[in-house]
Length: 252
Image 1 (cartoon, rainbow, N blue to C red):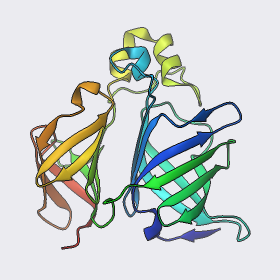
Image 2 (image 1 turned 30 degrees about the vertical axis):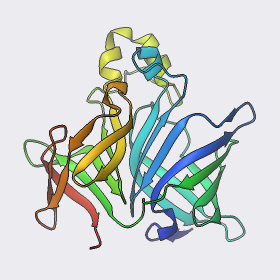
Image 3 (image 1 turned 90 degrees about the horizontal axis):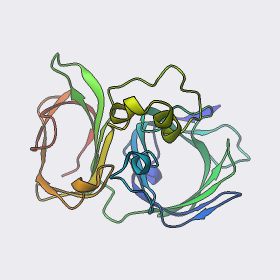
Image 4 (image 1 turned 180 degrees about the horizontal axis):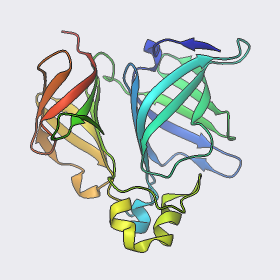
């Protein structure tokens, strides 16, 4: 397999999905943002009809984060993008999250499913190139956690995974809704997974969409500063202060 060592520049930025087609549905209304740094990704998907104030509605959301791998296993086929999920709002999948990627233009890419029959159209948001930052929150012992802060251009995404483990009877490809229905007494812990996305400009983070609807529209002060090769601080009333630097590309 011919692996591409680093994520090509053409993948960087924030992508909005404008179309999903499967054998059984056509979706143009779900709010979807995929933020991609040089290696790390974050993804949030909010169906238009999801009532996020109810457990059932919140369980319909999708969101995940991890590293991204681009390969060209077959020179006669388009390159393959694989989203290696380290944290996920939904239960584990039985197949990799991977698709053939065809760039129709620098700002439009088509994704064709490999392990499932689907077709997606992604469009890159203006202003999402340039700065690329990926941070992991530090715990009280100074050890990096799975909590992530990702920046691409003028956009910031924060991902805080749940602390609860999946119940023992969780099977691959179960949905969160199915797991919660089987374990209603654990619903609060299983749904305790926060992702917030918005713009970071002039020291203010304006949240556009979040797993928790009450967060949307809020504006918080937010300033990122790299303090050493491996550490950074974030000054914001809603985010941890100490972070480990996974990636920091911030051109002047």
